[in-house]
Image (cartoon, rainbow, N blue to C red; front, side, top):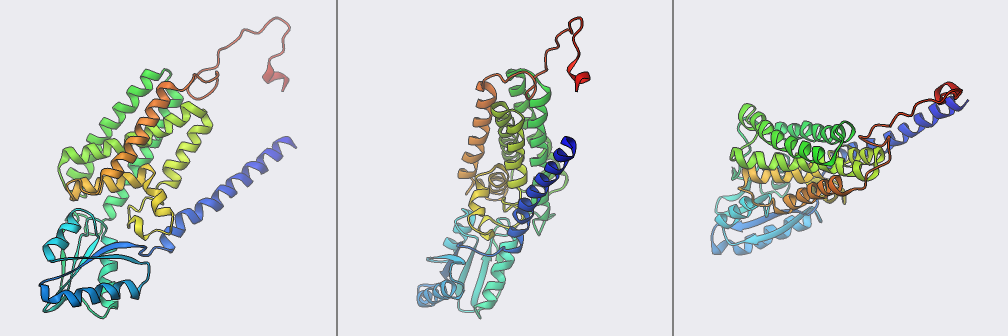
Length: 336
């Protein structure tokens, strides 16, 4: 009966976790939509200022809460806002109508959505100008989003394996740092050089991937050092099972239901996606906060591995010392 009860409890526990994870993965996709998505409106001349204000007002009123709309003097200022990641798109009003300037490298999904929004406003774009395009080999951004998943998965595995199999704090720290360095070099060689789904300089892409993988791996290992096997499970849950669906890597954080887009940016997958986009396509613009988040995870994880108190024998990564059996003593396994 004890074994049957244990089996039923395990089954019920797994189903409970399943019931929590299914909406966590499905809801961001099913309920995706703009939520305070930053856009700008500009005119091609001072004479177009009244039309600019009118268009900005229509954007705010047609879909309340969908857009955070600001105005800039002209098209060059609008393009600068896109390149510095202060906006996802710009509606530029000219003599021939509205021209939509987008930065598809920030999110191809958002670029498509805003093209549709221009049509809904009754002002279809005379043309669409992609100010910061995504990589030629990955026009829809699918390769970028898919490429992040194995980086996070292998980083979680690295944190788990180093904690369970490698005794000694110094060795674990060396393993985490070595893994991140190799992951940055090899991951960039694949995504940038082989598949061509990343733009930018090789060195900056490699640094971003190294920081992402270090944050994920060290975060898991740090929680394992602090809490043992329960910490490893918590780390894997936060970084992989929660972090991936909330990362916004396939769309944008502003398209996810609140507050999950903001929560995702506080976890390594979301912050890593933001930082990697910034360094690959925007010369690092808009990536400072994401870099701070990743750095915080990495430093906290490494500090926990280095400073956490040694756990009792049998906990993560430590062997159980064997005691010789005295004469006449019945081993515990035989007694059970």
